[in-house]
Image 1: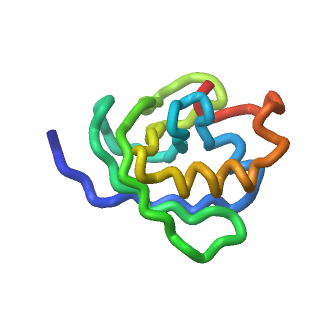
Image 2 (image 1 turned 30 degrees about the horizontal axis):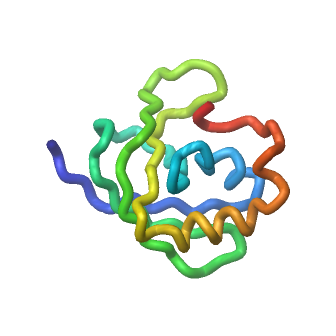
Length: 111
């Protein structure tokens, strides 16, 4: 397996966060646009900056979703990173930012 540098993702606003967040994963997750090739289950280090926040959250997760190059529809190439147990602070922060919006049928980068 090829090692990769840490991925960096800055989410500019709440609508983008809502489209990228993956609440259907047990511990939460986030979609990261990238043209790089990854495999399911591959460990990932993600430096995540949320809207209105200057702090970069360090996420140690695993690839749980792959949208390959050439994917159809609204989807863009990238991966879904499933948060690990220790990243509950990231999930809690994201869900606080999205309070009251998670049940809305917003377009998603994944499902």
